[in-house]
Image (spheres, helix red, strand yellow):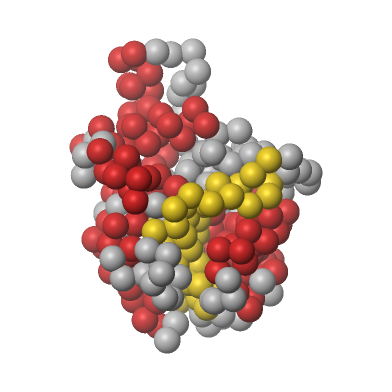
Length: 277
């Protein structure tokens, strides 16, 4: 994929807005007239761009709905309290407007997995299935990862810092960090105002999952920098909340699994959706 894909996808989408704090939450919808909507929630310090490699394929046959979560991307900061349950409430209220009475398959990545779990617990009638990728907030500490500050850097030094951070946190194999990944990281970083890292070691998602009943699949990249060495414990935590949950590990991929290993992730997502019936 080249950098032009971001402009092409944005041009092909329908932009919609719903209330969020003192402003609006921004949503993008592709192939709105198709049935069986699928909703994709991005990770912390992210935007809809986290799903750049999935949107074209999914939108070929389905309605694809992707918001910028509150305080991230183009969406306004939420009102208090600044916690996953409240963000999920705001997102869920907006999603009902998007769905118009239909039910959706909900997919959440990283912090988006936390929001997805809370949303599914609060509005089960709107969610057909729940798929989580790289989920934290399961009562287990995340692995420490070194990150470089970006704000004080420009030019080649800034690009090098983005490359370091992507390799440290998001993409396991440095050679897979391309110009598109760097452009997405730069845009997301500049526009991020809500800080989600504080919730990573909590147990809020685990508690929310215990209140859900729709088909659930939990996915991790086998080289997920935040979880490597502890993925079995994370799977066990999910199954403590939901003994019926499916789980898969996608080999040779870091935290941003769907970008680094898109074909393997897409296949795992297809299996999750098929298992949901």
